[in-house]
Image (cartoon, rainbow, N blue to C red; front, side):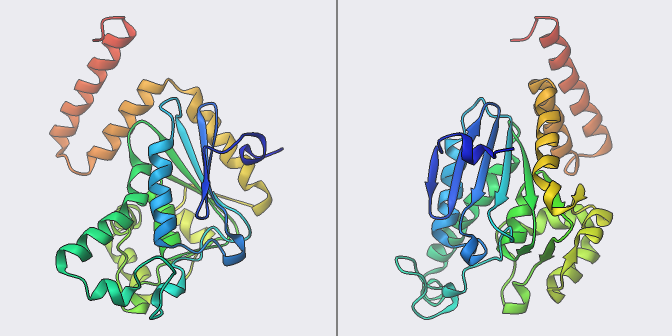
Length: 267
């Protein structure tokens, strides 16, 4: 079966990122398989742009990578004195003021934040290597479906850095503090079996079944009433920051909105 990328003209296609929309499902594809979808500031800005370009009619966003690897992480040219043409190197960033450095990292993070907004459900389809920034991009999504050859690794600490692309919060939430710390400070690989058993991934399938498994999941999500999905996602995302009684109250308020809406009494 042809992918959406082959059937529909892209809304965006630059800097190693392609956005295609097929009805209620959008697909964001990393398109530099020759470099194992290595990431750069230009790619991060384009991911943020893709989030702004997703139409309001979209309910599911699928994130995938072309080739054998989802993303092998940061383009290592960023570590060289010259960096990437047109971009500040890490050395130049380090020499900037506190405010400038904070603003630069905040801009980098924007490409990783929109995947969890309540009006869409995001699915990362992850095969091969998902290292560093690649791991964090997969963590930015609501759900991860992985191929049986997947290898997650958080290598930032091994390079003298920290994971700063929004990955630490979901990682701790998924696998717990102790395992998250161990994964980060050792930089070891997490395989498909461990990813599923630890809660890091929802499902693991053979590589040749990854696209079909993601398509089936996206279809099941789209089949559910949109407003109920949005309310449920908001409830679950907020649960970690609420007390038990606060969550009960949030459930009551959400259900009241749903009942009134179904009865035609909504605002």
